[in-house]
Length: 275
Image 1 (cartoon, rainbow, N blue to C red):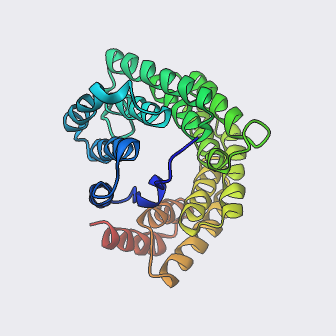
Image 2 (cartoon, rainbow, N blue to C red):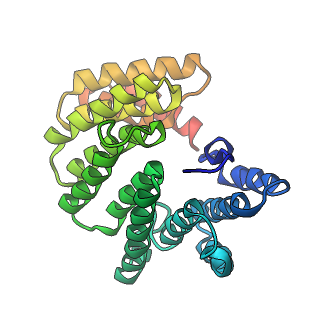
């Protein structure tokens, strides 16, 4: 059902190189399957930095012992093998038909093994990654909804699996947006926000609030979008954690209103934060 090592606590997805350092430090006392899991996460950290060749070589080096390892090791290996071929870190031209086929096979296998072993969290991870192999928004939505079906409480009692729901609703909103249906995208974004608020994590909640405001602008509800982005800007400045994407939206909203002074001020603040 899982190993004592808490992989998630070692991750800092904003700084994958820092995560790799943590994983390598943990290897000093890890043995057996725990050590193998840490190596899969090192490969993932490399992939996030677009070091796909290195990540693939590391995973290939684990293959001789994979058959004798536990189910969590095997599931994580297939997950990361797929991510070396296709992921958000890959440029569009790298997501070739061959790469998508390789990744899809790996994630299908990961999902099967995870469900069989009762590793619902990893099953949802694999199912949600399958959306990356699809090129049509409708197919992406179907993949995301399949992952949601596993993540929802009535399907899985595991909190780690249920925590995926906010991310999946966000992905569902994006799939509707890419299909040109911003009218249908708002509801999933709002559901993602409700879930983030319930989880109580400040950073992800701010992102979810931004997504709702962004979608409101796309729907033409500029006044509502502006009020939400202004609130995010004030809170970010008060917390000494301003977000350049908030100011990018504010610039667009102010220019649409003909408020050049406010738009220019927002543009200057954005440039200062993200030169």
